[in-house]
Image 1 (cartoon, each protein chain N blue to C red):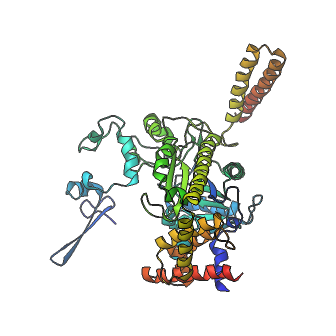
Image 2 (image 1 turned 90 degrees about the vertical axis):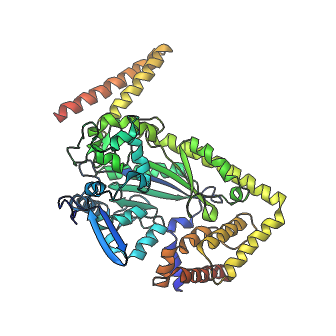
Image 3 (image 1 turned 60 degrees about the horizontal axis):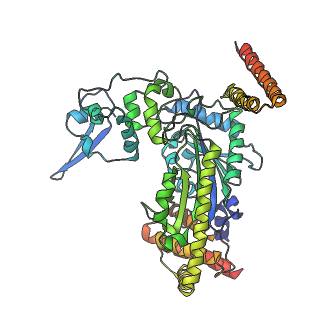
Length: 356
Length: 181
């Protein structure tokens, strides 16, 4: 069935595995910004030097494997259709900024899609590595080894005093952005998120919604990451982030328990209403879908709903984004058509589970 | 596209005016646009870049001074490698190459302090090749500290071992230097 095949492409292979604390933490990511020492940064460079960087990366790091990350493939932005680029952004394999630099921008992706090395984004290279669940330490260790392996061939821009030199002063030093994607429905339902934010910010960390604009976090999915990259070691940054995430996990578990104790019927009702909407709607906006998917996932985590895998939230959140919907439909769709297509896709996907 | 007015610089301001159904297009460079009154700093939209570049202007305290016409910032430093000027850097908030860090070094600390909670020095990973002998030098520093500690605690046997390690590393360092030159 074509839907099944497409789904396989929609969620990255590594997302199928569950990691530690994966009832709350969806994924952990480490990103390192690096530059070639002698080439101008993509912020000012002409096509010539950027092409040099691109072909160097292509010659040295495609069709190779690093440990478990096998068969690196280069995907060039100029070879992609606009919808295909959008799909890569929605899968978080590339940044929206990479798409803007189309001419000599590319990404190198491992077969399991855990590794993505963006070439000619704001910096010459942005190495990113994903792990399922809460595995920051492991992600840091592996990313650092991948970084060492790249450095065997690349002359990095590095300064004793300032560290790794980056195009933006906000990344200089370690060049590292560590982040954790969390599903925090109970904290959101009990309206405790705004209480957490100031404390998190004080520690040099930022929390923001992954989907949605402004302070609104559609689907109750949040990303927490470090803001400071200079003056602290990679290990210390990760440790700070680790301890905050650990506390958020505890708070979220407590809030879930409180909801279960105080209003079990209301909670169950909310979960099954959302389940019903997903199963039967004919038209659904991305916002409504996200909020129902969040409830469904909470229902799975709390044991109200069985036989549906947890990863359905990650999967359908990506699958129902505009780029994916259009890729799946094979044509450009207006907003109204997308809402219909989205409802169909979610229905088919959930019924697929029911049949099993 | 060239600026319509000066015919020299590239046009960066594009304006389409429709008056009584008549369309009129204007393409100017920054400077001409300002002189013609098309641009007004207060009215420009505020982006993240502005926020960031705003940090650079706070340096001297009298931030608006820099913006006033006929008042150019001190000396317009220019990076010898990529040609980025300090003024361009403050506008975009982005460096152009690794050498920019040296070129603008003197003016960087206040900016970095603001962005990184008061920090201006790297304390993290050192790359194996690009870091040169920095890794060895840091090791020697660490050993010297523990040597101090051991002597204070009168653990002379251990201290002697550490001293030998320092010696070995220092020799390694000197040999490395000899090999390079």
